[in-house]
Length: 316
Image 1 (cartoon, rainbow, N blue to C red):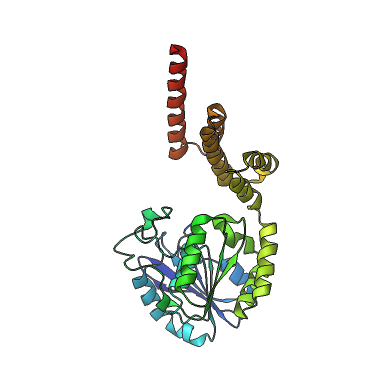
Image 2: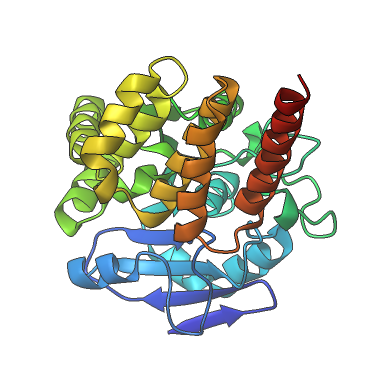
């Protein structure tokens, strides 16, 4: 049932049989449509009491809208003895940013950002286009927003996500970091499936850290993105190993993983002076993602370099 709506977000309430209320916040890839919310299938399958906050666009849940939405949901929140906040990326940010606003007992965040304000996080330009000074004044996560306990799941090999996670844990007390290696920015996806997600929530509720570490180990081994992440991580120092992984598992990479691998491996070939191999990889990447401006621009630069080098060679 839709209980709140404004220009930035919607809130959906689903009654259920769980002893807790799960407040979910969506990642930027899905948007509000009047009835859906992030984690909906999981909540329905497990009959979980849920309050789904879902943004109308990638907007990192502006505080003014969240405050009004929480007021509208006050009777539901008051009736819930235990409130668990749950989100990924922009949703992970919200789960940590609004811990005190919801008087949360537990917050579970996957790959969150401490902020998307470029002045606050100059090391992260992924989401600059979504930053609005009007919507996001003082948006950074701070110590006075903490309540209950929190868990951040992230890939320590993802340098930017690691910086965000470590900074949040420094700022907010009772925040525990749970590394899930070689999962990239998609850490949440290794915990999909009703049984695994329920196990994760159960371990967080009772602060069972050994169970969380064991669950993270199992999840990362089974992670579908693991071969891709290892291949990308190996590219800088062990390119031959990276190529071997690509040859063995490349056909299992997700489409964008395949494109990203080819693009970054081409750049490594350029650095090594193997221009023709780089061009072949960029051509393949462009065939998989026609019209992509970054790939087209890189190819244009490469063709200009090849032409210059041929002119120099013919003149000598």
